[in-house]
Figure 1 (cartoon, rainbow, N blue to C red):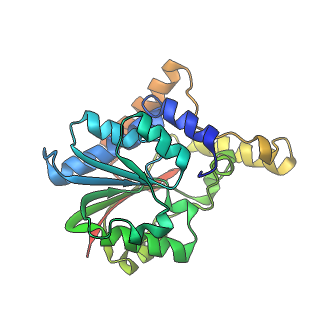
Figure 2: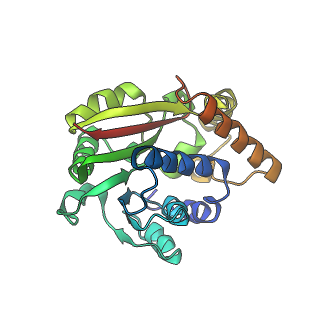
Length: 254
């Protein structure tokens, strides 16, 4: 999404409201709390932080040592509007950025889909190298090619993942997976139907590639809250599910 200013503008406006972002941010915060309890002094890095919605959410929860990096000048500018300490960094060059700094938590959400295999391994190795010995790497990723649709094209996403991709990748990078689950399981039939319809429209020419739009839009308030309630309940009742449009992974150094 590095050149997609319009998508960053939508993200900036909607991250605090849209059900999907709210659920993701709460998942990240719950994971951090599960491992670090009530501590608020831990060092946190959001690598590929976009417009800073997660960092803003964690700041409101009183986390103090927050840092972010992103490869988009637009994204960094939006982060600065929020007053967040975010630096412009090409993630392909992460190894050269503040090489002596180590973090308790690194979050890298919906970033891996922009990297080919060799570059992705180098990125994950660089992230692992920045973790403290008992640190966490938290990563959310778009999942299953069957969910590929207009959204992927709009944000420039190159790939989708299944857990077996990370079962190979993480050990090669010096990490072990502690938790992995797909999510939006309950909504997956609806999401799948929408994405398949989008894909058919793209193939048939009903939607032109230059006119694609992402899924980052705010539905009516009642629908947004209903979707939030459904996926929030799923997270509580079904902590691990076998299918969904996203894959949430927590890893630690070996």
